[in-house]
Image (tube, rainbow, N blue to C red):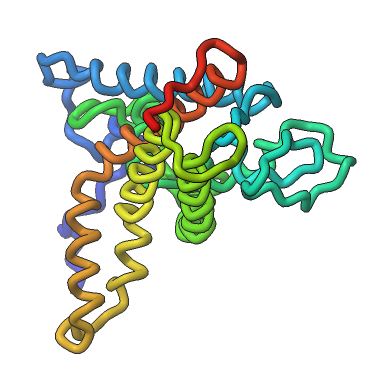
Length: 278
């Protein structure tokens, strides 16, 4: 029975009002950290900006992406008629002569979408570019926080489908690396520095792809009894070990794909000749 003495609910801003509203602890300092917490988000911003600038330039360059037998990972598979000839390579002229832009734009959307929606990269650019939050125990400057519940960030939930698209792309890059065991006349039994560059790149791309949280979920996320699926359970454990190194694999594979493209560009542009081991 109400007596009129019950404590009344506190009045204040609605939930989602940020860290400075009346429902949060009244701490006057912006944060209590004394270390150089800003170094990590600053380094992340610099690294991602460098890749964005470089990859944008190379994607729209539409030149110097093929030096027989090497093809840049930014341009494979080449799906337009205006592709440079790639004898034996994945050059499928699905798009006719009406496509006048760089052919890399047709394929980069899939690996780019896979990385943009990746759990680690979300954390990286949320902190580095949007300061949401900039670091642990540092308040974000936004008044409201809706997370990934509204457009456009709700599109992050399609990450699994980009994973399905990234797997065949990694397979095609593996095929490109195998074709690197040819010489400029497309004869087998040769190996150059570019062969090693493409091999290292595709290995890192595969490991990064398999370390994806969606991959781990596909393998064992819906299993109710691991004992009934021993093979999938072992695969789930193995991918879990890779997932623990997802951040490292994300950065190393990002650097390797840029370096692989840069190497092909330098050889194709005539900056130097590809050293041949045999």
